[in-house]
Amino acid sequence: MASRPKRRAVGGVASPPQDARVPRREQDEEDEVEDEDGEDSDEGEDEDDEIVGEEVNVEFEAYSISDNDYDGIKKLLQQLFLKAPVNTAELTDLLIQQNHVGSVIRQTDVSEDSDDGVDEDEIFGFISLLNLTERKGTQCAEQIKELMLSCCEKNCDKGVVEQLDKLLNDTSKPVGFLLSERFINVPAQIALPMHQQLQKELAEAQRTNKPCGKCYFYLLMSKTFVEAGKSSARKKWNNHKKDELMFANAEEEFFYEKAVLRFSYSVQEQSDTCLGGRWSFDDVPMKPLRTVMLVPCDKMDEIMDQLKEHLSV
Image 1 (tube, rainbow, N blue to C red):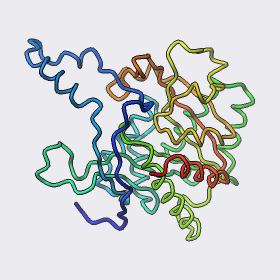
Image 2 (image 1 turned 135 degrees about the vertical axis):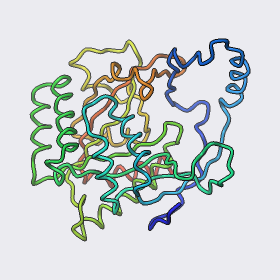
Image 3 (image 1 turned 45 degrees about the horizontal axis):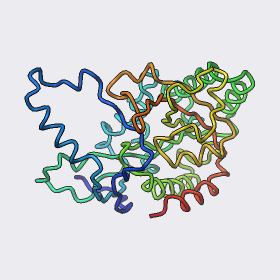
Image 4 (image 1 turned 90 degrees about the vertical axis):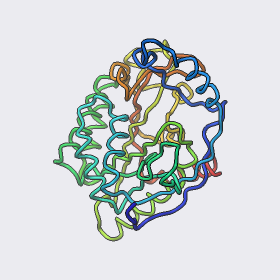
């Protein structure tokens, strides 16, 4: 693997305990029957039973984003946007170009003869930020803003839509699209050092007048879930109580608490693909959502303090 200018340990992380609130993606029907004769199905189920509940300690390290990370980042972006009309290829390219901010996480010391199927260049998550104001005019930045406004119009009152439109287009107060994506079985504890490093890099970018410098607001789009059958009235999508929402990235609850604008919208119709799947928690069907939040940057110190309190290992 090519050497990278930034490499740091982010700690040993275990797979989530059995009682952790982690939603589970159910297999699609066509995936459940892979062999017509089914002769190996019982044996496979027995092996799966042994794996479930097993705790595995894995060491991760963070690296600067590089060209090698294109496929991994794009895949994680596709899991976030699903079928939304956003040019994830261009977005991935921009994140790689501005690699003075952002990191990817990899498993530590993957040997070439490892039999666990993990490639040394495989990424388990990434964090970065796209300054939507600086990138005005690029296709992906405009598509992200259009997506946010379109979903807001469908799920919020007119006043909220007008507020979001004004904030997204106020060039005097730049908005940064904060992206923190990872595989669902990577615990939230890894988010603390990732966010700490990103804040240092953004401060340095501002000091040296590099892209992604000063932002007044962070825009987040979080993968969330709500119990299927709960209120789905359109007028209530922007008024979910925090305890009704389950965040795929648990740390994003703290961003939700500090948001000056927030709303959720359903992506259930987009989740009929292998990227979305069907989700459940304790065998209770869950409805997949995306929760949009606009958080003032001056609230980051408070958010970071909460992350330290709740996510420190």
